Length: 110
Image (cartoon, rainbow, N blue to C red; front, side, top):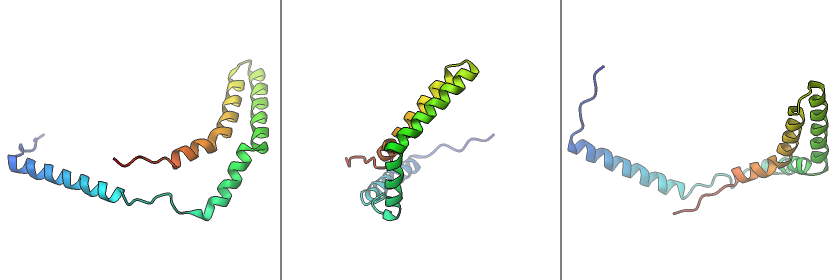
């Protein structure tokens, strides 16, 4: 397999300049990014679903997960069913907070 020829000093400077220019363009464009500031079409649905998951319905479903996990664990003579039931219940209850934290995360401008 042939290797590419080594870069001359002028080619290296050109690549360095192109890299710096691309970095500056990306930084300039990212300052005006407005992702996540619109899209209110589904806000009512999102509020409804998060209300269900963190409210009474979510707690009932979490308890049902735990009960099913206990039954499955007893049937298989293993504690993993109980552990998975707890994990599913806690995961469902905390999912809206995790999604909010990931989607609404912002980075400070340096």
